[in-house]
Structures are given as C-alpha cells and as structure tokens.
Length: 303
Image 1 (cartoon, rainbow, N blue to C red):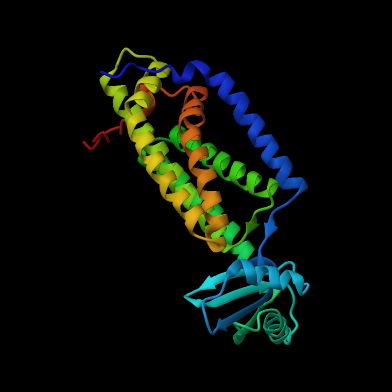
Image 2: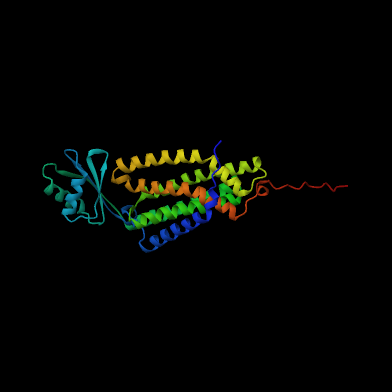
C-alpha cells in the first residue's frame, strides 16, 4: 500500500510560493504587457513559393539584411512554400519583399503567390473575442462544478484555473513571447487540462468522505491526493513529452503554443494539489456539505 504523503503539511509554504508567483506574473503583465502577434495587431501576410526547398534561417537573415527585422517566417505546406508575416499595410510590400529576396538569393528565386492584410480593427476584435471566450470557459466550469460537486469545489477549481492562466500569461509577458491565436488556443487548452486534473482529485476527496468517516478534512485530502498521485504523474509526464516534441520539432509556428502549454501543464499540476485543495480547507468543507438537502413533504391538510 502506498504510504500517505503529507501534502498539506507544507500548504502555508506553498501558499507563499503561489502568492509570490502570482504577484510577479501580474507585475510583469501590467508593466511589460503581452507581445501581441500580427493576428491581434494587424499586418501583412505574404505567401512565397521557391523553385527549390527554402532554408528558413537563410530567409530570415536575408529579410533582416534588407531591413525587415520584424518579419516572421514560417513553412506553409510544401517545403518550397513560405509564409512571411510583418507589420505594415503597404499594398506593394509583398513585391518589395520578393524583390529583396531575389537579390540576395538569386540561385533560388521567390515568387509571390498572395498578399493579405489584417487590419488592426480585426485584430482588436479577435483579442476581445478571445478574452470573452476565456471568461465564458471559466464561467461554464464554475456552473458545472457547482452542480456536479458542490459550490466549495467550484470555488477551489476556479481559483486554481485563474492562477494557471495568470502565471502562464505572466511568464509569456516576461519573456515577450509572441501572443497570437495559437497561444490563445494553448491557454484555453490549459484550462481544460488543469480542470481535468483537479476534478480527479476532487472526485476522490468526495468518495473518501464516505469511506473514511473518521478522517479529518486534511487527512482526507492527503490520502486522496496520494491515491491519485501516480495517475497525475503519468498524465503530466506523458503530456510534457508530447509538448517538448512540439517545442523541439514544431518550428517557429508552434513555438509559442508549446511554451504556453509547457508552463500551463506544470502550473496546472501544482495548482490541483496546492491551490484547489487548500481552498477546500479554507472553506471548511465537511461531509454535511455533500449530503443532499432534505425536501420537506407536503402535508395533506384537506378534511
């Protein structure tokens, strides 16, 4: 039998670490802000086709030499197709970029297939809709857990999820990692991953209230967390391995996505133990909270 680990014995230290990370993340977010990508700020997208497979690193160097330092170069479909994203709304920008690449890479000339412009109003709308989607996801989680478990579980899960999002966004802000639609998708995925991890622990806590009638709440949480520990480790490690593979082999287009997921998985694993469970202790969860309310029977007072 697995020995019970006293997770809650260091909950005060964990709370101090949580507060420190949250404050630092909020400070970075407030002072540095997010490094929004062209999806949100607007800019020009240029699709190029080469006669032979293109070298991404060489193309970036050629664009930087030509004065386009903010250009983002990505593979697109075949190895001969590239996408170049950069700020600016000049309709001649695509032709200028292609001419610059032809001059520096005459042995493998580039041809412009299409040029598209994303205006700042569209980017602002995407940003607002993304934030609204995140709030709706958190609200849906709150309602679901309040019905599925009990409102104290819902509060613990929501605080845990907010911590994960704030820490992830704070680290992205500190390192100025480009925040685009793929990173926004990663943040929404973090909410789902962390919630799943938290529900597994909560379900075991609720079950052990029936099995361990004499155990205190802290003992229950320690036992429940220990019982789900192997599952948590297996899930987290396997997920992190897949994320690292994306990070290493996914290229620039998936760099921000994989970094955000990596941070979120670590934060979610931590918060499901040391935030969600600690909130249950603060709210003094008891077995009485899980007993369905008694519905009073109507008395027939007819003569």
